[in-house]
Image 1 (tube, helix red, strand yellow):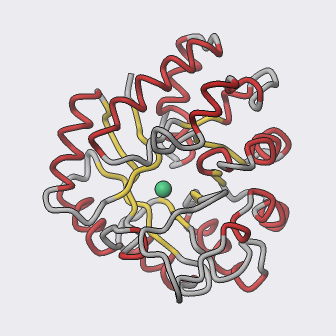
Image 2 (cartoon, protein in one colour):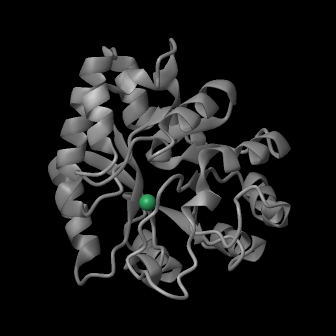
Length: 259
Ligand SMILES: [Zn+2]
């Protein structure tokens, strides 16, 4: 089974890339979708991700970071020209649904790049005055008008909406091209999910077709998240083919790779 971690980052920490690759080997993860959200999140940037991707093209799938309102469609084009295959967006200067951001989604669609949206409560590492990041702008329902305007756009709602699990899940249920990941650090929103059971939100037959494996944790905790998620798949009663899709097949499809 070829596992893809659909949601990871390049932290601004010496040796992080090597640590990430070693952790992937230990966990049996073949590929990882990586983005760098810059100093606001204690991370490296798009340039560093591009270098990592060039160094390890067989392991790293680049997700170009676009901060709507600060970055525009030109960053999407730059990413496509530099081998990035998807987008990661967070911390917009206004609601995701703001029509002024439409050129970003338009260019992503034209380049065939899925868009990974941070949704729900966000925790920048550089907070304080001037930060101006609002989780309100990133509620899952802020993505809903985008899915109507660009129905072919491949959308991933990260963290199942964090504090908006039902909204993210129902979006995945009613919109053809909306997917979710259940990534997040231990001790965060996942604790509620583990206590309640993921089927509380992903309740409909075939819901797992909309679920992607992603971690979004420091590489030292990747194996822990994978083990936890396997227990969640057990609880959901997923059969082997479905499990293989959640762990990588579905993401490969979104990226336009053969299954
Ligand atoms: Zn993330």
